[in-house]
Structure formats: structure tokens, C-alpha cells
Image (cartoon, rainbow, N blue to C red; front, top):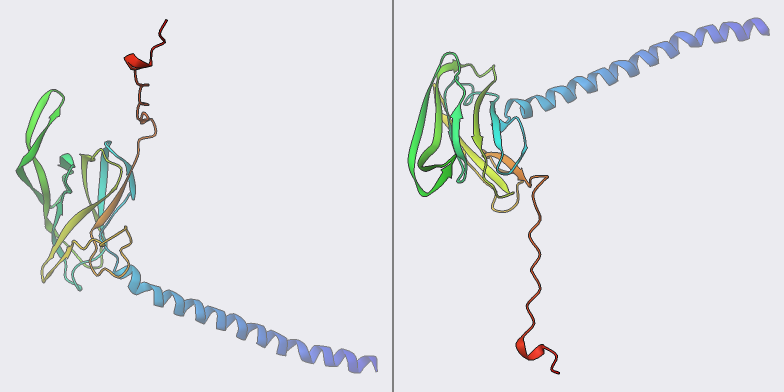
Amino acid sequence: MNTQNISTTIAIRPVDLQRSNLRRSSWLALLAIASLATWPVTANAHIVLDQKTAVAGSYFRGAFRVGHGCDGSATVAITVRLPDGVRGAKPMPKPGWTIERRVEKLAKPYDSHGKTISEDVTAITWRGGPMPDAHYDEFIMQMQLPATPEPIWFKVLQQCERGETDWAMVPATGTSTRGLKSPAALLELTPALNAAPAPAASPAAPKANDEHKH
């Protein structure tokens, strides 16, 4: 009786091992399918800034990340149009790329270190490459940001050997880009931590007829 029990136990073990291997194989297959399902999302990523937030009025170094070409075609030019209120933008040189700056007259000049600035950079273009669709790169500039805490949008024109994409769509309300085919790059401006609160209103002086009479 004991011998039969032992032989039965030994006979079951290979079956359990096979079931375990089948379960493991099924899980691996599911993981492989999930990774393939997420690949197109990465391949179709938008042009975005490396930082999502910055302090209003601060000097900011922004890197525009370009993750692919235009439907498989290599990128040969990137043009970033600057939002209103951005001041003194300067591009970082890139080996193999030339730089163009568009400078325009300002509707409202501003003061910078005691000097009146009446014209400023409104767009920056890098031309060169080409950057293959299978590669990614960053295009960097520094600038002074607007003083008002609010979201701002950088519209970016991506030109390729064949075709182009204008990343310029902005949501009608809010900051969600869900559903937008080619959204602009978003930067959220936050208040400065040491921003002074608005001064309290001083108490009104008493009127003449409110004075005590003796």
C-alpha cells in the first residue's frame, strides 16, 4: 500500500512541472504582446520639452526633444516659435547644424540691465543633419520666461527630407493634449517661491465730520 502511494506521487510530479512551464510560457507570451502594443505609442511621440514646469520670470534652459522623423523620413530642420513674453532667447550650437534667428520689432519694448530692448528673437531654426527617423535628438536654447504664472506653448515646425509636421495645435481650454494630432510643446509657469504677497490696503483716514467734537 505504501509502495503504491509513492509511485503515484512520483507520477504526478512531471505533470505539475509541465503545467508550471505552460503557465510561465503563457505569461511570457502576454508580456511580449504588451510590449509590442506599446511600441507605436513611443514611435509616435510628440516634440516635448525635457522639463514640464519652470518658475515664471526665471532664466530657463529648455531642450526640445525630437523622437522621430516625418512618417519615416529624416529630419533636416527644426524651427521653434517663441511665445509672447519670452525674452533674449539664445540657441545652443549643434555640430552638423546651422542656426538661424528671426528678430522682429517689439510692440512693447522692455528694459534689460538699463538698456531699452526694442526688438527681440521670435523664432530659432536649426538646419542640418539629417537626423534619421530611427534616432532622436535634442535642440537646446536658453531664455527668460514671462513673469505671469500660466501655461505657455512653443510651436515647433519639423521639416524632413520628405514632408513636414507643424507641432502647433493648442487645446481650446486647459492643458490636456489628448486628441490633438500635432500638439505644441507645453511649459507650465509656476509662481516664484519668494514672491512677495500683495500689500494690504492701508486704512482710510477718518473724515473730518467723524472727529470727536468737544
